[in-house]
Length: 394
Image 1 (tube, rainbow, N blue to C red):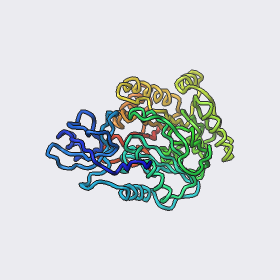
Image 2 (tube, one colour; image 1 turned 60 degrees about the horizontal axis):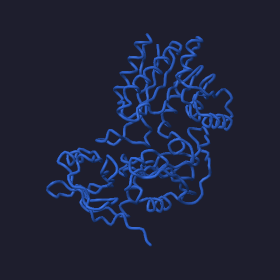
Image 3 (spheres, helix red, strand yellow; image 1 turned 90 degrees about the vertical axis):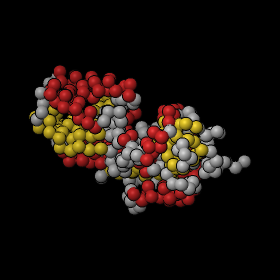
Image 4 (cartoon, rainbow, N blue to C red; image 1 turned 45 degrees about the vertical axis):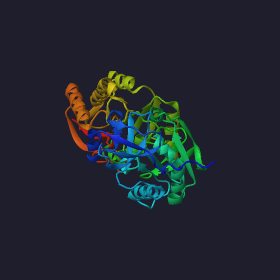
């Protein structure tokens, strides 16, 4: 039996005046509270109307999610398979059609590329796909066909083993959708090689959003370096080319094993990777009177939702305060937050508070965000989640 065509759009949803204004202001989400009349039957894609029955566009619909509608198109005419291919082609072309051998980058960044809840990452000759809503999931087969046509990869891997899908009433799972995808793939980033575990690694295998920040931070690094939350050593190995020594710290044995393997791959001998809790290690290093010239803090998101924000603020302040105390005068602190719920301005205030309490003035050398293959869509603040400061601690 043939699969139903998700672009056979027969249902519509009416939104409140506030919801309609939200769309006109550039946002792509409509929450449950702004639905006046839902579709009469469940459908992956629906027409969106205002109270006067004016067509506002077409959206992915999910009855299980707090985000009921994700706008796919604001055109009057409905999208189709040709529309999807055009959107994908535009998104890929923005990153440059000539893909470097062994390179890695994000090709589709969901809402920011006007393809809501769709993520496509390319690692050398392989593609990793995420479909994070019911509507996006209904297009999975089409996405695979179009990606094969546009990119001609050796394999396409699905990494839908993420908690976000549970909020959509979708199961978590991963597996090969087409071709073959090895457990690990070798990529190249600014002359440094990395083994990436596509099947089990965090996110889709690698933190691509920090790529440009790693390259920038390495230009400022020197001396003896401490890389906290090192994961598979991405920041650490960039620092190793400029520093006398690097110590990378993480709690994951698997991540540390891959970090050591990545160091060996590049013939790097001045990087040491150790298991430990960063909060404990920062305290222990301070008690022992240790000092560093460069420290990097790239923690996981401390605030995954608004309710976690008060505790997250305390965590961010503590690790930055302790890092500032551990730095030699004129030392470099590279510090990041990927918590969307902590805006950049608030993060900077926390850094200022840590500076005051540590009695260490700071200079801002660079104020950065996620890499350019993770663009920020004006009107949609959710697409701006990563904050990165490169500081000089006086």
